[in-house]
Length: 238
Image: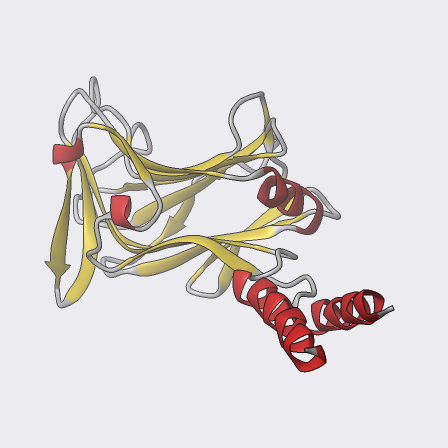
């Protein structure tokens, strides 16, 4: 009877603090080395470095070699399921210092979830310095979208699990709607960095922020509170 009451109390705490909510599952910030933030490096580590870019702390990924550098975080089964069913937001605060940079094998963010759904967010620049951003999915909404800025801009890809569509926002303004994911199999993962520059001009992306915010994932802090609630009840009974 005592254990039943404890279990009921713990479940009540779970309903209050462990209910489904948005949660940043992985994040790069500032000039931190991404390998210290939960990302695994793949490729030539010498292509990444900390920078203070016009007073903004960032991590530079330079694409000037035939090799590449990317940082990856593998999604758990729970995270992938929540991304598919309830949606996610993928954010990148980026500046593109090099002009005349086509959208090919240059700075990018990529996510694959649900085993076969994926999106690419990637950038290029015109000779004028205008930035082109492309949310690459499937269907007719994969065109390049002109965004004029030579400063940092916040790019957000928001996926809706109910509609199976993503929206692209730049500094809070909508620039792309209703983009369906590409479909092919692979590992559930978020990756970002640069592609190999073979056959393409060099490119560079300075990332002051990169994160993945998945809806309806209980926060670890909430789970800890559940445990503490149960332990407190046990102590009180004793």
